[in-house]
Image 1: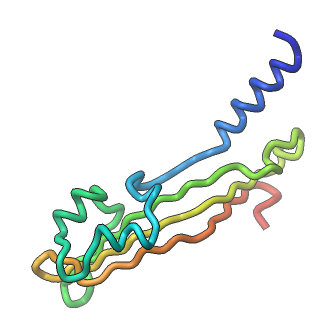
Image 2 (image 1 turned 60 degrees about the horizontal axis):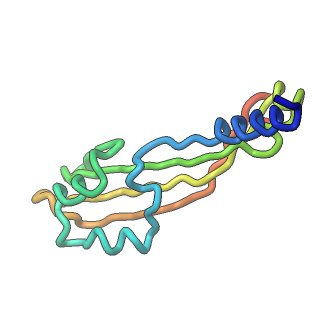
Length: 130
């Protein structure tokens, strides 16, 4: 294998290794608008939400006993600095998007309110962690 092909293979492998996703895959392609078509306050039930999005990452309860289900999905990719030889030995960084869906159910298991948000995230390690 000649040097150019070897460098190309290593570069493609590094790019593939530089991506990571964590959380509920069902949220990967969801947006605030698409969620509006799937969850209707006062109509959608807990079983319908779970059929669509699966089990939540976290379930808590309000002081009044209402259930709050939280779904999350984070997708990050390594930043260019992470691919620089020698420099990447001292630290790395990655950036991407985090999506969070929070659903509040009333005592009969019907969606009372919900919120979908998407935010930018950045992860840094080593010397870049400042």
